[in-house]
Length: 501
Image (cartoon, rainbow, N blue to C red; front, side, top):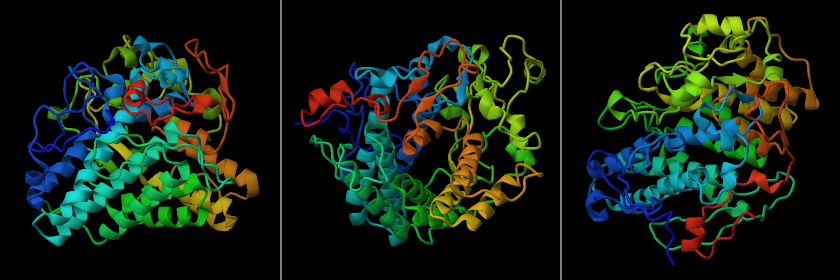
C-alpha cells in the first residue's frame, strides 16, 4: 500500500529537489538521485539537502513549466488570500485563481488547486523526514548536525500545520480533544500509506517537533559557510514564531503571547520608507523568514509577484489589479501610512499607474510591487515582525491581560499612524480592534482565509466592493466547503484515506 504523494527521494548537487516529468506528476520519482547513505555521509553533503527544501519553497514545480498555483508556497499564499473577503478581483485576469476565489477549485479532488498544496507540503515533510532520520549518523560538527536537524523539524511542523488547517475541520478551542479527522502523520522515510490522524494528534506532533526544533536551534547564529544565517534558513526566532502561530490556532493564549514576544525581540519594525517600498526585499528589517530569489531562479510567471503586485507585466496584473474591499479600506485612518497602500479613487490609481495598458481603479493595491517588471522576481516573505506583535496583542487580550494587549498594539500601530492613541477598549471591542488591524496589516500576504477558519467566522463578502467575477458571497461556519478535498490520486493509492465529503 503506497501513497503517491509522499513518495520522494532526497536530491543534492545544486541543492534542489528534482521532480519527475511523468504524465502523472503526483509520482515523485526523481530524474536523478544519489543514495541516502551518500547524502548523509557527512554534514558537508547534508547542508545541500536542507538547501533543497529552502529552494523548494519558491521553485516552479509543474513539469514542463507553468505558473499560478505551482509558484512554490507563494501559490498557497495567493489561494488563502483569494478565498477571503478582503481581497477583491477587479476582473478575471485570464481566470487565474478565479475558481479558488469562488470556492470551487479546492473542492475538485482531481484539480490542480487541490492536488498542489497536498503534494507541496508532503514533499517538504518527506525530505525533512530523511534529514531527521539520517543526520545524527553523519560525520561532522555537532553544531552543524543540530542546526540542520532543528530546521528540518521546524519545516515538518510548519508543513503539518499548513496541511491540517486546509484539509481538516478547524481546531475548536472549546472542544478539546479535537477528534475530527486531520491528515496522515508520516514521521519517517517511507512509501507506506497511513490513515488520517485526529486533528488533536496532528497538533500534538507539531508541538513536539517545534519544541525540539527550538532546543536544537539555540545559539545557532550563523551557518558554517557564511558569517551570517541567510533569512531562508529557519532560526530559533522563526521556530518560536511558528509555535506562536500554532498556539494562537489552538487557543493557548499565554503561550502564544510569550512566544510571539520572544520571536520579535531581534527584529525591528519597518520605517515609513520601508513600509511603502513594495514588500519585495529580503533586507527589509521586518522580514524574519524569506526566500531570496535571484534572477537565475526566476520562473517566468511562476511568481507571487506575477499575481499580487501592481506592476508585473503579466496578463493577470494588467487586467486584474487586486483591490482591498471598500468597507475595510474605510476602516483605515486617514493618518495611517497603510492607507497609502491603496488608491482612494480611479484618478489616484491612474496617476500612480501611468501605463495605460494596465487597468487602474479605486481601491487597487500598491502594497506589493515587483522589483523586476519583466520577470516578476522578488524576495518572498513568510514571516515578519508585525505579525508577531499582532499575535501577542490578540493572545493577551483573549487571556484578559488587556493593559499589556493595548500596549503591544500601540507599539505596532503608532509606527504606522502617528495620530494613533493607546486604545481604551476592552473585551470583545478590544479584540475586534486588534483583528481589524491584523486584516489591514497583513492584507495580501496569505492570512485571511486561515484567520476566518481559525476564528470560526462565516465568509461574508460586501456586494458593493466585489466585482462581477465573484459568484460566492457567503459561506456559513461548519460548511464542508471550509475543507479542501483530498486529491483523488492519493485516495486511489491509499485506501486508508477518508475523503472530506
